[in-house]
Length: 406
Ligand SMILES: Cc1ncc(COP(=O)(O)O)c(CNc2co[nH]c2=O)c1O
Image 1 (spheres, helix red, strand yellow):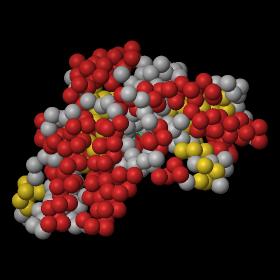
Image 2 (cartoon, helix red, strand yellow):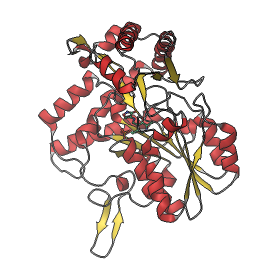
Image 3 (cartoon, protein in one colour):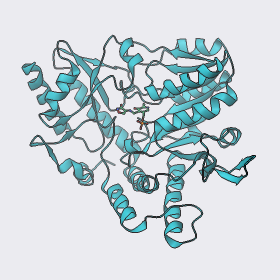
Image 4 (tube, helix red, strand yellow):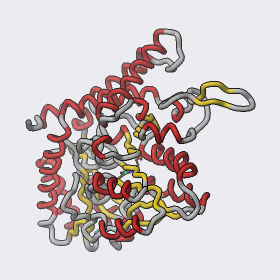
């Protein structure tokens, strides 16, 4: 089965727009994807016809909204092949999900001098929450180094596990700065062999390849709606049921309670124990059509197509003399980071923008990674299933024009 690109592109209205009087060439998908037409329609319909608070309401609008919101949970359980729907916790996004695990799991399972392992390539949202919690209990956050190609240094990883006291490993499935696809199924098994739990940051993988939490056997997995064609401000934390049952609530408030007295409160069952207050109802309802689109389009087909785009873009950019690609792992997803001698990424990004090409420049919230490669920033093109080789040709032509100008 191949992607019908023209049909796909017609489902993303933003692709029709122009910027600076040029057709938009959107290559910033690792930051946030465009929104599928069905998501836009679902959001508009909700705010036009169905607005009401959900859970516990006895009137039609509340019950209707609750059914729609909870249908998203069922869809995500199917998407992830999770054993139970109560393992699907709704959050504000990947950052919120990782902070939830850090705030609720670490104080309960990690003690003084224990170790939390993260890799050099992690996004700041998979570094800072662990530091905040580890500091409180005098636990240690240690770094899994990476190779010059941007792969996990597996020997070093195993040595760190063998040193002992590792209670948790938290690692990106796919690096947002390098594109490296980590062999997390192997790394999860190694962590478990040494008595450690494993949290997967799936922000960059959920819309680019099949993620099966039972096959991976991960303990936690986090991702954001806005990186999979859905609304911003909404995300998911998957956690094994027994683990989540053993963890204290993340935040206190409405919905997460059973009985409240001034003296003491008992908590609601999963998943609600971790979902305090009125949620982003529209975001939850708007995510379901995005999931339906992903499943209907077949993630294996998406992965193959995006690999074609990446290989084509890599081949073309390597023809430009002064360009150095950062991130040359054998297994890569659709992220192409590069630097150019004598041209700051921000200047490149600005000149590309003037030609209608949207890429991201900067440290991409991975400052330890930038330091590892002795750069302060990179320029990063990132692709999705609605991009084309013709767009890549426009990007490369615009890049050459920008370099001639600088
Ligand atoms: C690997 C990874 N983890 C966590 C996050 C945080 O996700 P959020 O909570 O939805 O913000 C991002 C966002 N990455 C990027 C956001 O903008 N450019 C990026 O590369 C990410 O790429």
